[in-house]
Amino acid sequence: MIYKKREVPLRIMQNEAALRRLPPNYEKVPLIEADLKKRKAGYYGEKRVDYHLSFLNDKKYMIFHDIRLPLNPHYFQIDTLVVTPHYALIIEVKNLTGIMRIDPQIRQCTRIYNDKTEGFIDPVSQVTRQKLLLQKWFLVNKLKAPPIDFLVVISNPATILEYTTLPKPLSSYLKIIHSQNLIDRIMDLNSQFSSKMVSDIDIAKIKRAILKNHSSQEYNFLEKLNIPKEAILRGVQCKKCNFIPLQRVSSSWFCSKCSSFSDQDAIEDYLLLIDNKHTNRDLRWFLNLESQKIATKILKSSNLLSSGTLKGTTYSRGRVT
Ligand SMILES: [Zn+2]
Image: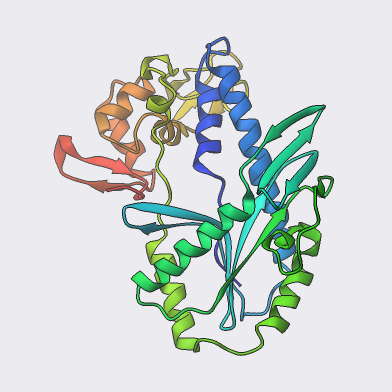
């Protein structure tokens, strides 16, 4: 059963919002497009692996997608965590195209694609580290946890996995698998870990602790990419022809270019690109709106959380206080 769903990553939504709101010839547009393409491929790869996992419908499997847990002074992230009373399984998803060539002896990984050879981080070392961090996290949070195992799952069925020398039996490098074999490997784990290691009460505590401690990553997009906020096109955008800005006409937004009406979803773009909270005044600046009254009306219908009073009232999605 899925207890934490995989959501569209923030960085994908920010890239898309930036591409909607930067002039097409802006110098950083190609960079943003390339980053978006890479992240979308990774996200779709993870979704492909999720599809295989969706066949585990027995409620003994607690599935958490894309979790980020605090471990002083940092956070660690896990693509997918499956917890059962018998074992916990960390799944690290790799979305590489071409040939993945691995030398288990010197722990060197190379990817060959389009006649280009490049190195990539050893996924086994990476997931071994995640296992240690998760063990520590269970300990710090005083949680009685089952033994932890891991798998590295290749999401693209066309990717070819090659070893320069065959891994020894029981080598962790045999835990790199193609996604279509995931369920079979989980069935093997069920036989391997046949005894129940923790009680149902402990399992419920683990579930609560993960959901309570998970925290999504914030990312100050414009600052990180060194884009001044003045470069972002302000105003409500036409859903039909992408023209900016629309005019406020009797409780709706009118496009003078294609003569259609649109709803406003500019607040979402503000929260993604400019700041994760805003005041009535910020909204008026972003929507090119003079009326404070109309801005208040829009904010009231936006389902955002408000905090503070009068002019200092800020509105946010509630992810950040
Ligand atoms: Zn239009």
